[in-house]
Image (cartoon, rainbow, N blue to C red):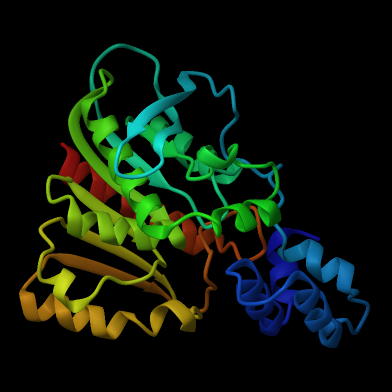
Length: 294
């Protein structure tokens, strides 16, 4: 079956179980036990799990994509882990470029996030994707272990690591000093916080992330473009309060809510992916970058 067909065949309850599982609210055992009630009509627990688990063979760019230069580099994070590392990818050539910091989900720098960084580089940016798991040995090769490792790290320390990553990119020889940020889920929450705490950023584009406080909203100086999934009740529950705080403080933002799609709709390695919404969201993201990084 095609990915679209699989998504149409999967009950919404399965996506809800996967969301709870991949965000640490449900154990692996509880996830598979929960799938049992949906294993009907020729659908097995194994096939349902396979449909929603990531398949990292699905990439929009190649690791050795022609015209791009990519490398893992180290940088200092004195307020965080001390030493950090990330994936730096840029178009071949020597001219300084605007930078885009890409913040991963709650499982480290997996192949999908590297792919997103390469997409940003193909659009003409120096893209940098730090790995919050570097102090623990780096992304371990699978998301289950990645989630377990990332849960061992302190959230404030990880925020400091990504903030230091933005400063590293700003000051890197390949950058012209202008930096935007984007991130997904955990990365969306981090991106929202960076927009509050680093007013020098050119702009910030969080995808379905958590929310700063009303007090932090009043500090925002960075233009925001937010992308939310219509079916993502868990994340969306916090949006009205943050929206009200932004409006009350007269802060700049634009928000897009994509009806009928799930949390993670931009990630094309799982069946939550919605091609129409993802392409539209990414085109809006690149337009926003162009407007603020020119």
